[in-house]
Image (cartoon, rainbow, N blue to C red; front, top):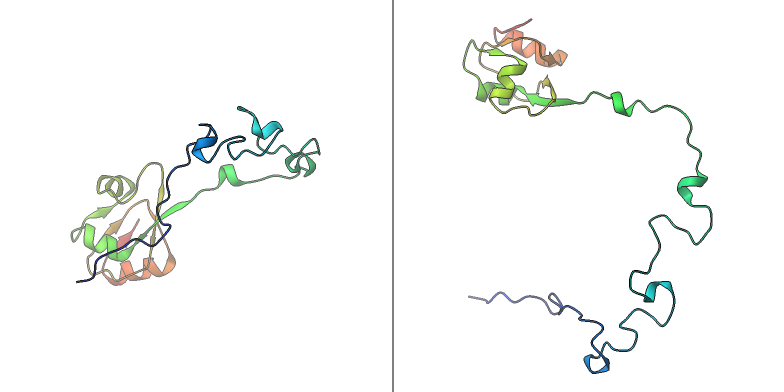
Length: 143
């Protein structure tokens, strides 16, 4: 049986800097010679471009974004409903949450992925047109 060997260079030793010339990482401790970034606490803030007008200030902010008002639906397939519910049960927002199929403030939408063999009553949950056809064909109803 072959032994598992890690590739060369896969694990490297942590560089301990600032411990003198004998460490091999002496003098400038890999920070270059002089300047703002060689000092402790040195460096510039995020987005700073050396005094040039930064990109986030050069670009105009115009228009309206509908993103805060966007409603995203949690997709639930017919196969999941068929596995999670018994024949004749009601599928609602509360029962989906109780069974752990949706979480938080998600809004559910039933999609026609998979097959359904049980007669389910869909109450107050959105369903795609093809999912509605499959539910009705199995003897279920949508309220």
